[in-house]
Length: 277
Length: 144
Length: 125
Ligand code: SF4
Ligand code: SF4
Ligand code: FES
Image (cartoon, rainbow over all chains, first blue to last red; front, side):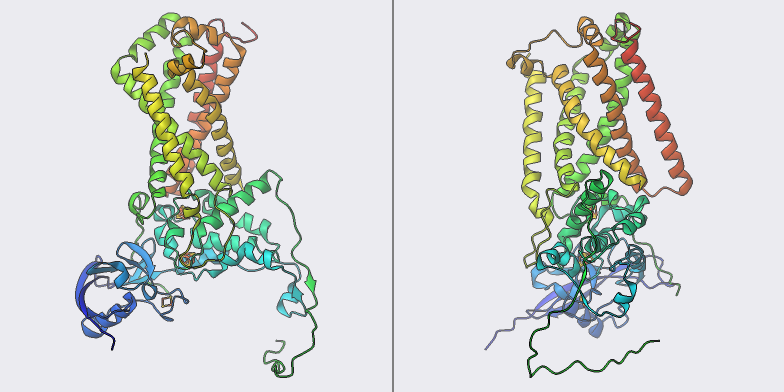
């Protein structure tokens, strides 16, 4: 029989109701905590028992959708990915991610981050547009080439890194670790040919030159993406490019997918549902 | 959609306390402070030493104006700031050009970050800067 | 990509400073250390030593180089800090122009002082 010892924990929640509250304020709630409960579970309990209007974002509750980034006991983390027990404290203080405006309670306005992300072109840039829209073959990439960007591609855009970065704390022009990391993710992709375009998009105060490797972003990233690493590699590449030392490469070529014998039990691909517009 | 979102940037507070994880954060603050201090001293230094263009008298005058224990300690602080700023600057240069952060890896829990990768370098920086500063201190004040 | 160029020069200037200021600090302040190394020198701030250095082409050249590198490195770093405080458009312009003017003026003044010292190793004497 498993022993389920409950204990009481205080949830201090930072609340802000736009239009009503002039300033955000803390609100205290006591709840019973079972072993294995996450901060997200705790928030549901608070909402259920004593604060029905409490607002936050969450969806997958398994660290994959990137919506539940919050400032938990002073550190940006995913609420669903943080056990209450691991905080080793009887007080759980939950505030919205700093460096983003507050929409309500624990809901940060992530739009500026996503806008910058889009402006840095986080997608493959190639000349063969028709092939990308309607693929006939595959882009050639070795497992080794995959490793150059795989780590950065695990980013779930939760914004925890942005909340930890000292430069983002004062400078709204600076793109911040997430968008820069994602720009590097595509720059480092052997199938991509957009380095020069992204280099132009990175000019001015938003570029990687505002990063001074305080390293906070990588310390808090819940997915091990290490945006600080991506940014330093990006700077290295860009300086090499300036000094004409950067190796130029054409984006990966198209190849026929391998044609082996087809196993019987694998069904054929379903019919296309999307037709030409 | 327009929201009445409330600004929540940490501001200059974020330079010092943002996340409080990793002592690289303090090296970053110290690098800025020592840099500003060195710059201020340097500008002063240009004016003081330019007196030599006028001749020996004005030079000697300037030198005696900046002598005395207070200035000796001040000069030593400049030396120590330079020692730190220089050694930490080497670390930052190596990191920011992408040399000391390692290659991208498969993120397997518990995550090893570039910050962890260069941590030994950061410790070495502190030690070397400390040794240089102590050595300089002995030379400044003890070995006359 | 002006920022990239400025930043790269910042790193380059840092390297120059590392070497030259290291030398400068050792000569000026670490007299005992120099003694250990067997290059015992006269008191470096005595007028005679100052004049001797002013008469040396090596010292004059490195002074000017160090002056330029240190001013650039310092003022770019300072600008960085100011820019991160998110000044408005006009203020940014003021900072850029102001720091450039002050930096250049200090460079001109320092170069003059290095070259005009009595007996300085300049072509005019
Ligand atoms: S880099 Fe990490 S912390 Fe930043 S948005 Fe991506 S997953 Fe979140
Ligand atoms: S390493 Fe760079 S991007 Fe990351 S927190 Fe520090 S300054 Fe910001
Ligand atoms: S709810 Fe999806 S990451 Fe936490």
